[in-house]
Length: 156
Ligand SMILES: CC(C)(COP(=O)(O)OP(=O)(O)OC[C@H]1O[C@@H](n2cnc3c(N)ncnc32)[C@H](O)[C@@H]1OP(=O)(O)O)[C@@H](O)C(=O)NCCC(=O)NCCS
Image (cartoon, rainbow, N blue to C red):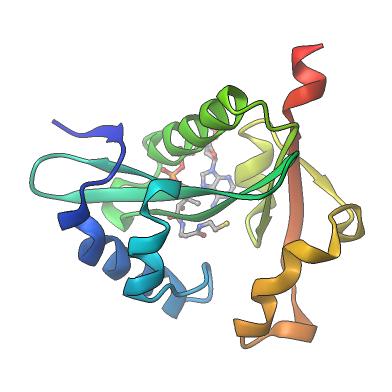
């Protein structure tokens, strides 16, 4: 049965394949296998015992800020709430860690807005969070939109 859970190390190669597919369409950054193993604890997957249906990562940048990234749902499973469940899993983890704000850099702000984020000016995010941009072919011509969810405000 498919469920949202932490990945198994034996699933990392399939995680890379899913990411590579979306990266080829320019929707996420590609990740190399060593980087995926090193950061595997950032991830949640939507999977059953034999197949991976989706994945997402929560990557901590600093004491009060973490990025939701590497979000991909297999094409044939889209539109059924899987993306939402994956985002909910990382937002819940950010809440447990008392992280004040989560953000994403995305070409799909509408998806995040439907999942409780709001669009902000990229300059609202600290410069440090753009360190991965150097690996992106678009770099200076970046068309990604910043979306945030303020967990600290929601707790008040
Ligand atoms: C973006 C993606 C993860 C969404 O996954 P999904 O499982 O299809 O999304 P869900 O079914 O959980 O949708 C949740 C909500 O978002 C909305 N939504 C989903 N995809 C959307 C899109 N492309 N544009 C706008 N809204 C979208 C849904 O309508 C739904 O809203 P509602 O319940 O209020 O009607 C999936 O399309 C995907 O893997 N895309 C390719 C990779 C990508 O672009 N990743 C994002 C990088 S930041």
